[in-house]
Length: 325
Image (cartoon, rainbow, N blue to C red; front, side):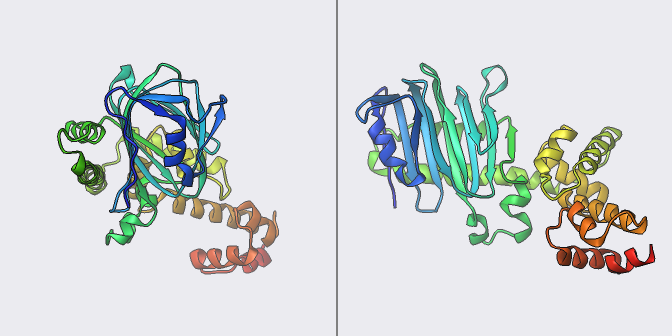
């Protein structure tokens, strides 16, 4: 099913039209007070639900208000390119500024692992020329995507952000998604869907080529690994995210995952889980903690789950280790 609102050239886009298009996402304005017929944007604004299951937002607009809006973000991955302008957004408790160095075009990928609150802070008079393509959770798997290459495996944890300098091809595809097809409005939706699929394919292909490239662990990488391990050891609980570790190491989530696989043969979170189990074993061997206390310190809410993971890894139960101590 296709749904579209388009304001070609420099036409006015009413607040009412934006609300109608985004109603199912729980879209609302936090500030200021805007009347339904007020002009919220000027320029081109398109929002399409594509037959492939993707969703496309393409805009070349100027904000008419310092407008704060909120919407419900569903699980999935958003790939985007800013050709001009920037955006101040937040996903849940994480504030994010999307802008390129020196105003240059920039691309981003924002992963939402669970339903969350999305907020945008518009700036009156600012022009934003950008395109977003949203890939819903499960879309890759439905396309026979290998299970080991899920969105989470590629992107990291919930609210993980990845940025890069877009290629010439990605810039061309983004520009063509924003501008309607000259003289063929009846093919506009179909044309943009083809471009959106090409764009997603191009980005994912580049990521897979990067994932498959052999990694050599340099001395600089070992310094990053030490920072990552220090972060993991300082946060011995299950709430630690790959995104936190990547920031501590000064790397992207994907680069950090590749480095951990090259150095340790495992993912960041699996590495952290083993570190917690090892720390729990040392505490049990020293007689410092009970099995229940060790389970809680290792981030396990259930002592039974902790015992299962402990025995699977060490071949002995935590109770036996504690009794020997």
